[in-house]
Length: 367
Ligand code: NAD
Image (cartoon, rainbow, N blue to C red; front, side, top):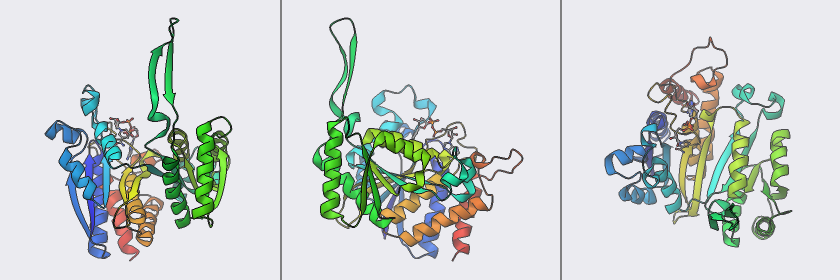
């Protein structure tokens, strides 16, 4: 029995998570994978009830869940709240308290959507890469930081890129393990040519590769060259591991190779727990989309594909994950698409609910 905590959140969060719950129910009732699903509040929804975007009890339940599935947080009505209680703080606190240091962002190009990419079909068709971004350290957290007077009438903005060996090693290990479950290739990206933290990054990743994962084909690339290669020939990559700052940029660029924001899942993983499962939070990359909330227009695929990642990375159910991803691909091929995936203005859009039902029907049809 796998314990899932669903935190639907705000805006389109509850709409897309309702479709995820249909998929979970199908696996539970028809596929023999037993799930114990519970729900709780996060973001603005939690603030409305508890005056905090993440109640301590919810955090405690999150600590004991086998996987957390999050929808989205944020809405305009919370824009003027104090920074400490804004909806987004709920998500950040979850990531920090659970020490979710490895952010996994796949960039997969579904054949039916290849024409949505800004690159040519022949460059992106069949694309399937994974970017692993270090999420809890680096220049976004390093000290000293701040804005100071320079004493001469000007100011100095300061941020510090800082990584310890152990911070590099643990995210490198996560990336090597992933590469072993995929195509067996890992490319590590940094700026070792101009940054000492990059030199350390390269040395530590190489050492983990040599000593613990000799079967994985490891390469290194400067992050700027990596950015060029991502748009020139993205299919050369399998898994990419990089730091917080470069990962932020590279994963957004790679994601857009594949088309719509409504198609992008993600996972944030922490240390392995007692049962050999990592602490894990799965969520679509998109936000709460207040402009379309409550209209049945939200694309639930990113949230459904995030659950597929949970099947694969938390529960080692690669076959179930693959079947779910195929059901999503088939749904798109069959033309059941929310408005964000329609190019022809005359085409008939499907609702969020119809897309969820279609995915379940295709799971069922595939047996
Ligand atoms: P957004 O991702 O919510 O929306 C950007 C655009 O993409 C909008 O036009 C929206 O309609 C569209 N879109 C997003 N998801 C879609 C989907 N599933 N189907 C169809 N269209 C989709 O980003 P934003 O507008 O910058 O932010 C809105 C709110 O979400 C803000 O409060 C922001 O802080 C929050 N946010 C939350 C997260 C998160 O929960 N992880 C991430 C980003 C933004």
